[in-house]
Length: 210
Length: 210
DNA sequence: GGAGTTATGTGACCGCGGTTACATACCAAA
DNA sequence: TTTGGTATGTAACCGCGGTCACATAACTCC
Image (cartoon, rainbow over all chains, first blue to last red; front, side, top):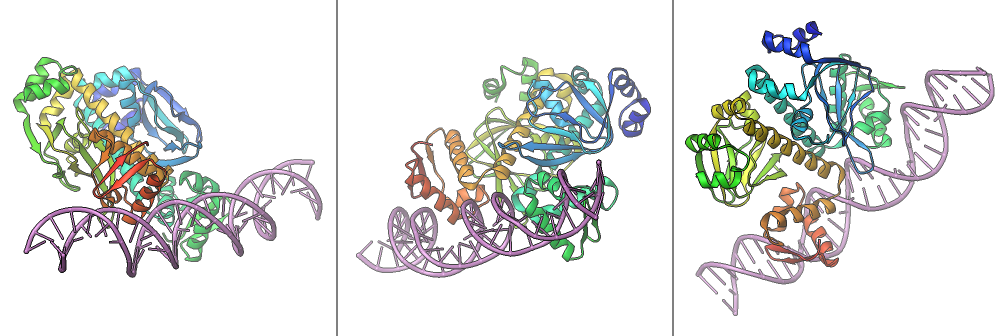
């Protein structure tokens, strides 16, 4: 565990803090697709993301989803932090987008460290700030942009996260993330293909020039 | 200042903390309509809201606005907290919805107190959590609801904040807040009136049964 | 290869909300 | 009371994105 910690967090946390994390943290490895946190659940611990990508979703009345943002290496879940302290329930769902490794830290420790370690304090606040900014991006997207533009941004982000210009998803899955319908997504994707920006294949999309 | 503080925060902060706030805080009284924070600005201090209501807005590419949420008595601005620490610029605009009184606290103190006072720490985290939840509500609203439903929620919230069943705004102003157009809002308001739920007058709307 | 399953393509239609244009009503100042 | 500004009402139109229906293509397992 300690080497994963050092790689991701070694430059921002001091040695005693790293040791404390290693002492109380529990490593958790989860496969792509597994649910890490459900809406309405109480939160047990705070996760530090070592590797992989987690997607954060919001749900509507019919149980349909909307992708809010991704968590990546070095991120943590800001929900967790505030929820833990106030004993509130989760407002969001967290699902592993790829295989992921995280370290779970007990809530009590995480609160203790805020007083004890300035670097931890900075980490927590910075983390919060990142999450807020991602929420603002999500709001801009749904409030100010049309579906075609949202789709392009989605494809770009997906490719960035995957580390390759290929999106390995069906149109239906994309529609879920964007809270749209399969027909609409297929229509818009076809337009992008006709503009020479992407190539469509069964079960994957290749980005040519976005 | 100290009595305003005691009224709003006396039951959650201990005496020494109240005294520290009183010692370094600066009282600021602002009239309704005045801009407290502009997008892109650096943040000077952290505000504790003593009385009044502040509205928090996001802006699109054309400079049009979208109301995100209101801050009320006992709230603080979570933007400020994270922005201050990271020296980042504001992502939002803050405008006084009513006359308001707030206490400005220097950033350095606010950070110091997180380590020093558990009650302050709780306050900061709880505050963050409230803000996140309000953002989720805003997202639900724009992503999952039609304009008629959003309008009803808006009118309810406005009336609650005003403390009377009267919304003293023009249709144009409501349209700005909801990032819609005047014609659309007039149309929907007329429908609500025909259903007997509101009464329309020049410059104000009376809620009958919402 | 045939059958069944899953993914994609596409036409037809429709409602919400945005825009334009103009009429009307209200209010204040002269 | 006229005049001019501002707020509201309403008709006409239109595009985006949602739904339904169905065709076609691709992959899997006998």
